[in-house]
Amino acid sequence: MKILFASAEAYPLAKVGGLGDVGGSLPKALRALGHDVRIVLPKYGMVRDVKEDLGPFDVTIGGGPQPAALRTSSIDGVPVYLIDKPDLYDRPKVYEYEDDGERFGFFCKAILDLLPAAGFWPDVIHSNDWHSALAPAFLKTLYAGDPRYRRIKTVLTIHNLQHQGLFGPGLFDWTGLPSDAWSPEGVEFYGQLNFMKAGIVYADLVSTVSPTYAREIQTEEYGGKLDGLLRSRATKLSGILNGIDYDVWNPGKDKYIAQKYTKTTVERKAKNKAALQAEAGLPRDSKAPLLGMVSRITEQKGLDILISALPKMLERGAHVVVLGAGEAKYEAPLAELTKRGKNFMAYLKYDEALAHRIYAGSDFFLMPSRFEPCGLGQMISLRYGTVPIVRATGGLSDTVLDVNEDPKRGNGFVFRDYSPESLLDATRRAMEFLRGKRGWKGLQQKAMAADYSWRASAEQYVRWYKRALNS
Ligand code: ADP
Image (cartoon, rainbow, N blue to C red):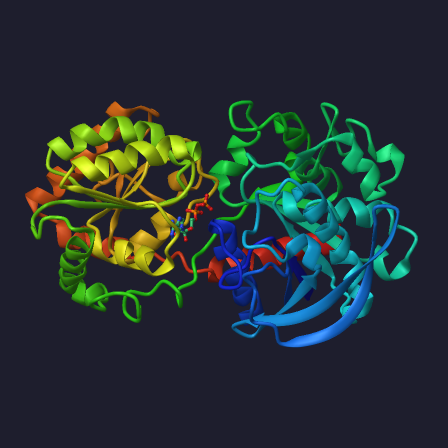
């Protein structure tokens, strides 16, 4: 099959969070299964690795053709098409600009307009999150009369329903979508243009990144006002769990960490703990439970309950390292605690290498998320024998089982209520388990034995594409 994988992020060219991991690694896994997968990505300022220049092409949007250039790059053998449009993309960040509506509206149209220039006619266009979700709407309306386009199927994957891409009606006019698309059955959403909704309505199939999240988004609590629409599309909605890139995340080969180790040499992990303690200025105490966290610092990630729980957690003997960047209202108390607490360190930045050292050096990994479509942090930490402490939500429910509840299969510590008390209770149980020593090494090894590589999930995507082709 020929697949065009459209994403706003693809590691290592551009990554903000989990979408970047998936955008870099799923196409690779699909290619390993023998499919011709190519990625399309805007050429942001940080994308430096440009290989070929395929020349100029026009993107028809905003009332007429607009010039852009098509360039190429690659990620581990996967070809990447780069949309070069400097006035929109040649900036330091991926998102959070006032004109993100135009930036990603343009991207969605470019995904289709680049095909003749690239000479690549995919069987399936795979959109990911709102940034590429308008492409199926363009395809089904503006290109319906063109036989080259008519046979292309589209799938949308929802990585996070919290971000839907909402913009005023002026942007709808600018896109050039036909006026009848402006209705509650189309792309209109309470008077605004909703990119994600457009994808859900127009794509042949919709998936999300874990079976539990696929159920959750059909409820009012998690559905972001699209739950009714998602329920009505339930037969074309599925949850396919993300994998992680086992080449990037591999404690046996990780070049960023002090000491490499495998499941059979897990005791060597202690060296990484000592190195992390030294680096973070924490007491060099091999017995102290070290809890790590690598996360965007946002409400979604449970920062409010974490911040409320931290003083008690530290009082009870936890040592904690946090790496993350995000909202000031959470960063400020973390910075304050770093100044005061000798057993606490927060790095408020994005740092790929340090993330590896935290995954490798911690005993436990914290993920107290309010909601979590899939979550990669817990899978990465399992791979590093770092036992996850998570809230039971979304993909966390599908990947982490509580050791106390299920001693045989349990691979972490799980709490249910979204409250500081529940989080504290889970960390207490976790620290008791570590201090008790019995079974600790076995638990680390059980964590490392789980297989969250992409293979099985990539096969599920292939089946999903085939279903789209037969639809
Ligand atoms: P989300 O996509 O919601 O941010 P995930 O758990 O799915 O959450 O993926 C987060 C990814 O981003 C992981 O690979 C994690 O290691 C990485 N990450 C998050 N924050 C940072 C940071 N400050 N520095 C380095 N890596 C980070």
